[in-house]
Every structure is written in structure tokens, then in C-alpha cells.
Image (cartoon, rainbow, N blue to C red; front, top):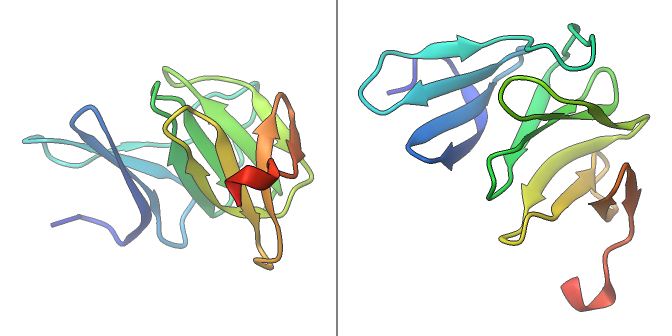
Length: 126
């Protein structure tokens, strides 16, 4: 049983990651250990997460959509860069080959991450 209400459960190498429901943290549970929280990890000087959603790539990169601040951040080993700024991305998913796809908060558009930009996906993906 989870110790806090969460959304966006994702598993990676025996760990379960989730964004805390209504909160501003990513929580992580390791199998057999009590719940531990990963809060506001250092990401290029950013320490002000709003409510967030997450996705994990097959290589273990954690992508976080910071809803209040309208940005996507990337974590690897607890730190990493701002990836996209000024976006209304909400749900996010990584494909098996590591491509990040996002859906706008209005649910009207799917885009994929290419470098530091969101672009329309190839027509064969839809």
C-alpha cells in the first residue's frame, strides 16, 4: 500500500516512482524498503516544482511535467537540465525506444520531444 496518494505510477528496475497527488514531489519506493521521498532535486537551479506528472525512459531518465510552471524537466541521477519551457504538457509517455510523447492539458494535441522542442509526431505513429 502506498503511503501517500499518487498519480502516474511508473516502475524502473525494481523501484516504483509516482508524482504525489496535488503535491510538488516525486516519491520513490524500493521493493522491501519503507517509502522514501525524492523532493525538489537540483535541476539547473530549479527548486520550485508545482504539481507534476512524470514519465521514465527505458534508460532511466525521469521526465517531469511541472504543471504550474509550464515546463518539462529531465532528471538522471538526481540532476539534469530544463528540457522545454512554456508548455502546457500534462500526460507524458516514453516509447520503448526512449522517445518522449506529451499530450497538451486540453488533450487536443500529441507532440514528441526532439532535442529541446516539442514537435508533431510522424504520421505513422498516430
